[in-house]
Image (tube, rainbow, N blue to C red; front, side, top):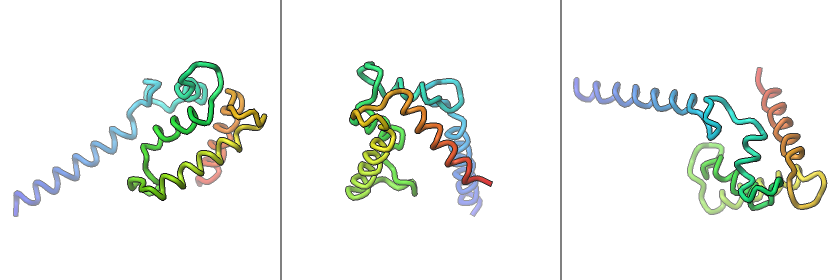
Length: 123
């Protein structure tokens, strides 16, 4: 009984520590805080041409999401298709110049809008 209780408490403590580490872990910017839109854009712009192609945008969004759904479950085939559709729709929304690429300004505008939307949803 003691062993089972000890194992349960240990696993709970380990899980809490892992969650806390995940919440405070620095993103690729390495400063222990969220990346700015410019930092994200630079990381996503893999060919360094100063704009994001649909493929670059999709790859960066897929990498950031970790291929999981909003519920945290691994994405299956249909979920991947839905996620791909959402990313494609989002790209089209952000591409206000309709040139098939995202400029830094378009990306930053979408980033700011997304933050405003999230903050308005919080009490």
